[in-house]
Length: 186
Image (cartoon, rainbow, N blue to C red):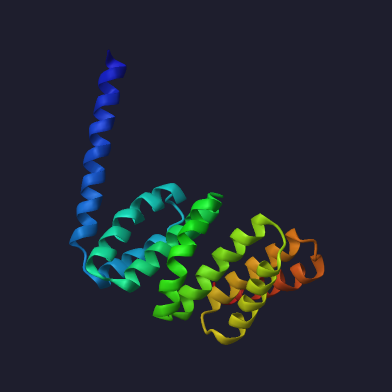
């Protein structure tokens, strides 16, 4: 009986917390939501699954309100978390929906983050010409963008991909470059 009461109380507590967090999402302005998403992306304490659950109402809200930048930031972060959880088919489905919107919005950082996620998805499907094209696209972007953190992420993704396909020399070159950019950030 005590176990049953404890489960009921936990259930009620979960519903209240969920309702509160959704209410918090609704009360934020567009700019506050962008700041929140940035903090959420940097949060190493929250599990990827919890982050995805937090992002779903933000994605819905941003669609309803026409907040394209918030939508792209939130859906990109969700895709990155899906890839981390190895939920590749879901990530691929989301990529198919968001890439045309992102290309229309033309935000270089979002496009590179989505390309990295797409590279990770393609890499898990095996070597293909599309994978190689995405790799070359990312290396080109690394030469043109100004965001050192993102450049480090590009080289890290490129190094992992080259390692998985057995090109260890290129993998080491990319991973060393990634390390150089990561050291600059800290």
